Image 1 (cartoon, helix red, strand yellow):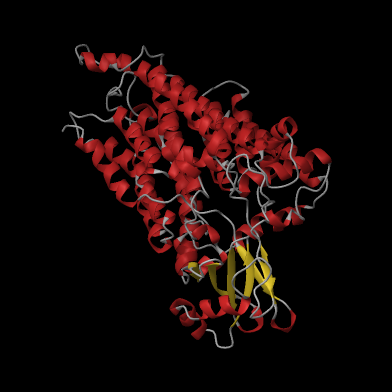
Image 2: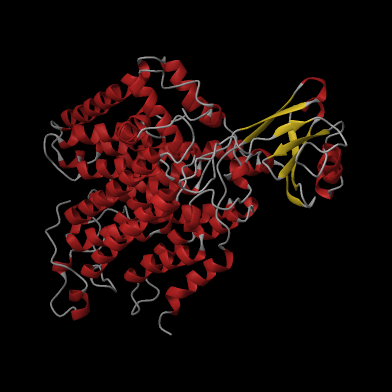
Length: 597
């Protein structure tokens, strides 16, 4: 069949994609006096939507050694300790830690937890979950999977049912099919789109708790996309790249518009009925209420989200309208404010992509970019997790939209949006030099200092306003310690740097290379149109992510819309197609507005 090139990547993904991803929470255990271990668990509720189950309902409760089962239990503490001690995996890890000991805990109404600690209780080295009725071992973990429960492949933790094959695979096909040209099956665009989908392979291994496979598989597509974006920056006549011809769509643009409407409804419905709120969205709601109540924005967060204050102040300010409309119970419940915020951020990113595409190449490109956003499975994965990462994407896109104008207010607006993106999550601060110098070469030398001053004024003004709620109660030192210092010192197994260790020198080199790239792209002559700016911003964001100690799939939307804008925007306006170019191309394009990049 001629559709084989499209279905083949979906089939390959199907071989690997499995159980939904794990919940992002870490478990920390502390040994108490006289060798008795007291356990505290930092975790979020993984109950289904609409449930009001407490986040602490599964917190382990210590049980003193005894051969008498507690009330309502079949097994005793001594029995579960003996079961866990016989496991080869636990015997092996305990052999590495002489003097280690175990403690038994009640884990919910039906399970036991056995935790093994190193001498003195400084580190939990092993953890076993045992069914009380059957005595069967349900889980056993060692290494980083003891502390990082998100590395255990628990079903429904990130994205809920979007990870199911019957949702993920159709989305992959829907994303690729409209852009597939059967007359040119080896088109470079096809490879670009397949690479964007190839993150699914890494996610599949993550879903099965195979972290040593999932983490390395992230880097080949990141490196490819970095190289691809840099290649699009080649400078030709008039500062722009030579368009490869009009964008040809397999599906007519009006049909894609209908698809956008359908997929938007599907995304919102799935979010309302199926999604869960991870700690990121929970933190946004906590911070929003603190701002409204006039309390310190940083420090003393609830024990079930102790480090929820690790983001920039604008992140919490963006949640204020939603917290005020939908309220908050004070606990980690269904958090409707976080759901509403995630949906709003998603719709904002969608609208901005459409407007950018429309300004660049007319309505066909706007519809194509909007369709790419709603059909790409990782944007839905992020929406289903109700995180703040789509807000980052929306603010960067808004800065690009401001850069597409040449009015007096566009430059300070670009600076302000750049600051707000950086004060949501700090990585977008790397885009500030690039956004500051955009368009300077088109100005006379006498006007360039004024343009830079306007950008700086917009940046500084927005940053000062965003910092008011934080600085009203917290010092800059406190904010710095709770955000940047915590992030810099946090270990994580979700990057090659944290998973393997001993690569600090290489990681530092990658980080310095990212900084160097951000500065070079700001001053070195390159493609100067909106496509070039999108490609440059995407390259910088990808380079920054390559050096992160903690990387996760929720970060893909930071660069995905920029990549799509660069990949599809490089095609010429459909109106510029030569006469007789083919009725199919004409049918696949709506009348285009004049490009205004």
